[in-house]
Length: 399
Ligand code: MLT
Image (cartoon, rainbow, N blue to C red; front, side):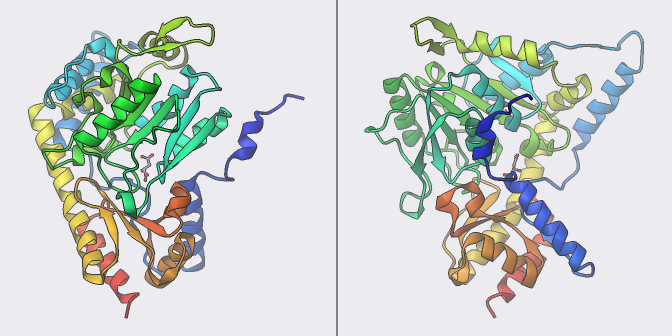
C-alpha cells in the first residue's frame, strides 16, 4: 500500500478558514431566519472594476478569434504583464528586471510552493500570530519551525532574535492577521539579520496597497541589501478584487543564491524558473490581461477607489473598538482589525458567542497561532451597510 506523508499527521484537522466556514454553515442550518454578516475570511465584496472587465472582454474576444487565439502562454507570465508589474515597483523606487518577476495564480499558492526549493533541514522562523499557510506548508514538509512572538508589548511586530539562527524567515507586512506594518528601520534590521545568517526572507506583501502612510515601505526591496536575501510575494486579490479571478506575482531576484549541503551554489531565480516550468502552466491569458489593466493609470485609480471604500469600513470598525475601549491594532494601513477578546473569553469562545448573539462572523486569533488565543480578527472587506450593522450588533453585546 502507498505510504502517506506522515507530516500530515502534524496538521490541525482542517485549514482555519474551512473550520470557520463549517461552523457558520452549521449555525445557518440551525438558524435559517437569522441574518449573518461575514467579517471573517478576507474575501472582497466589490465587483471587478470597469477597466479590468473591459480588458477581460477584449481578451475573451481575442481568444474566440483564430487570428488572435492563444494556447499555452509563458509559464512565467506574458511580457505585457511583467512590464506592468515592473512599472508598479518603479512607483516605489524599486528597479526589477522582468525575468525576476513570475506571474502566478496568487500569493497563497506561491508562499506554499516556494518550499519546494529548500532542503528539509533548514530552520524556518515564523512569527506567531501569522497567516496559517506558512506554518502548514512547512509542517507538510517536516521542517523545524522556530516561532517568534508577536504580542501587544511589541505591537505584534517581532524583531529578530540574534541569539537564534534561522535559514528561512517569513515576514508578512502589512500583517495578516494583526494589521501591523513594519517600518523601514525595522525591515533594515530584518535584512541585516538575514544577511548575517545567510538566510532567505520570504516577504508576503499581499496587503501593500493598503499602506497609506508614506513613511512605510510597500516592498522589502525598498531596503538596501534585500535583493540579496529576499523573495517577495504579492497578489491582486486584495488590490483589485481578484480573490476569485486569481492572479499574483512572485519576485525572485537574480542576486539570491542558496547553497547545497556539499557547498554547491544555485541561483534561486533559476531554481524557481525550473520549478514553475515543470509544475505550472501559467495564468490564463484573459486573467493576465485583466491584471495588466489594474496597473494602467485608469485601472490603478479604480483600485485605489476600492481600497478607499474598504478603508472607510476599517475606520468604522476601529472607531467601535475605540468607543468600547478595546485594545486593537491594524485598520490604518491594513484592512484587518485585530482586537483583544472581550469578557475574558478565548478566541473560539468569542467566535461562537458573537455568532450566536450578534450573527456576526469573525476569525478567531487562535487560528493564527498561540499568541492569538485571546485575540480576534475582523475584516473591512464587507460593504459599508453591513459593516455599520455589524458594529451596531457588536456594541449591543456590551449592553
Ligand atoms: C484571510 O482571510 O486571511 C485571507 O483571505 C486568506 C487568503 O488570502 O488566502
